[in-house]
Length: 266
Image (cartoon, rainbow, N blue to C red; front, side, top):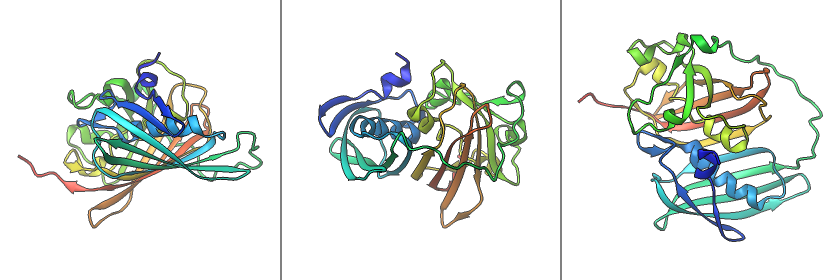
């Protein structure tokens, strides 16, 4: 079993209650990655829902999660012919840490119309991109996800910032695994914050709310990603993301709302 599958596995306690072990294999600065936590909750929803197509997940990070035991509680909100909607809560030591809403469509619902008003991002070839290092043992996420930045937006790693808060590049598992909705929620949150491109490694950017809408399932391992922040106001920022497969098909879109605070030197 792939390590990621082991780390999102759940023990079913009853119909709507699961037990999980939050792993430290997918952490950023010592904190479990938000996309990884979303995958845990999505797994619980998927075990309850009879619909599974084109999921939309929105997670609210109520309090800081830590590696260790957790309970996941699922609640059905509505179930129509076309859509099923659920709420999931991740609880540790009696405290709610994450609350997530999920919407699933009927899997046999045909894609009647499709068009793109944007093209896949222009990203340098893999062998020209800059690998994100595991900066320390607190960043286990980058030990297990292979993230490579287009050199045109990687200057911040060496202290050379840009005028634009934009990151783009490639991502896949370091140990091969086919993609599914769980891996896509992880990948959507596995790039560094786009604001680092303009501000450098001097920002604290904890996620408050994160939405991922999965559109297609990639058939090959590498994903092309683009993340952009345009506005920072009152200590908050948005980050909009696009994920594409190697064929040029849109895989997922996402948006984060996060806090932004300069980290004082020393």
